[in-house]
Image (cartoon, rainbow, N blue to C red; front, side):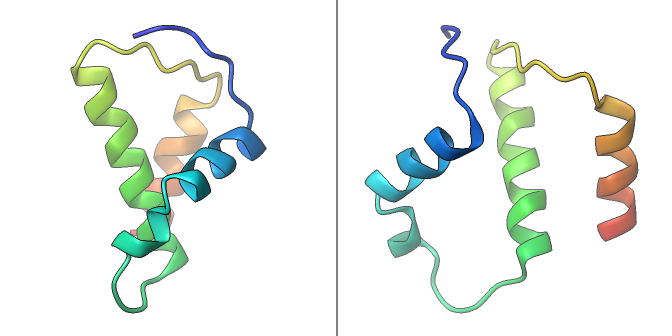
Length: 67
């Protein structure tokens, strides 16, 4: 896995280019989408990606608060 340094807008652009919304059937909660995104990042880490964060404790608290 390479280092790309994407920002939030670039990630959103990629999801839009992939027509990601066509895979989202029905309605869902924003919180569920965020939790799914965090799980996806965890899966990337298990595959060997290094996902930078300076907010690991804050993210864990955030996940706990919204679950």
